[in-house]
Length: 325
Ligand code: ACO
Image (cartoon, rainbow, N blue to C red):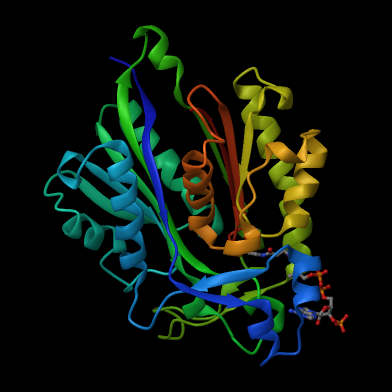
């Protein structure tokens, strides 16, 4: 039997505390105007003391399960994308598994930084296609506020905390019209030669500390536009589609200038791109599922729409997924 993954529900969670650009400008040499103009970011959410990546993940997962009309005991797979796990080990996914009351199947984390959600979605989709699991939860959850150098204006203004999740159901292929919906493809890439243009300068095996995010912003920016345009083209071609077929582009939310440049290169009208960066900033692996949850809740993304997601992050890693909603 051949299977396809269909999206059964999605949800998101943002910590309560809003930190505006003006609040950052009060203690750093920066300004609301600079941040908005260079990045499109207006504010970000920051997790409360003691509020962990797993707490954000459980909140997003609970909302996605509710939306799907399911509970944790219906799941047999959790793939959680994060670069900011609660602990070095075990995975954040197993804490989420326990808190959702899921007692079977498997839960694990994947690490592809800002591309993490696409990598996690591909991993879960492959398991469902192979019949290894029937119902999967794919989560992107991050607390980047904990790995920022709050004295480095070039990086700390860019990120926020949050989590998003989608529930996938395996449906048999060839089952009339319904199987034309679902995850049509996932394409993943990495280039390890670029591991040191965006990284965290700590870790259990090197410094024994968590470390802080470091980035050559201009180089990441340049490579992002090139790789993201290529991977969307690759994803569309693999499905015999063109940019005109896209109902919604849901990009990783790193910088509006990157999002706009990729949209322009694809010839997409700006209204067809889901943009949350003004309120969320860059939430790394959480940004795509958070954007999906918003656009589904407000009725923009509807059944039958063609949704293309794309992301690039540290590694470098990048990828795209095409979903018939
Ligand atoms: N406020 C004011 N000035 C600043 C700030 C700030 N927050 N940050 C940097 N500057 C200054 C710099 O010091 C520099 O000053 P100088 O000319 O006196 O040296 C000047 O602004 C220009 O700096 P650049 O780094 O060249 O500015 P740029 O236009 O490239 O914008 C940015 C920086 C926003 C980081 C951009 O390079 C970028 O977005 N890169 C993509 C990286 C990214 O989004 N990474 C996120 C993780 S990866 C991902 O998710 C895709």
